[in-house]
Length: 80
Image 1 (cartoon, rainbow, N blue to C red):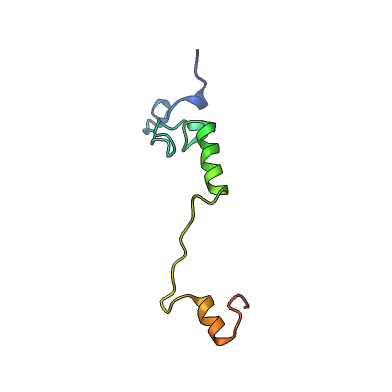
Image 2: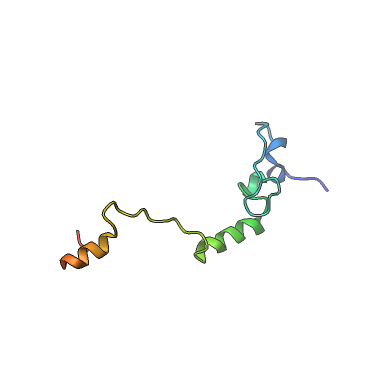
């Protein structure tokens, strides 16, 4: 079975750069679905994002929680 250009790993493409491993399963990434090796791994990653598995932590302020400080002062922290 012949591979199409989009299914080849990065190492086989003209740039010669090596493919990084798929962040889900560790197989070499494929150009068409980069940085994943397949549509399946891309869908798994999307499901993790949408399900809240991945989260970007909020940086705590130097004085503590801004909402708690504002509530103590009787001010809505979300008002601009």
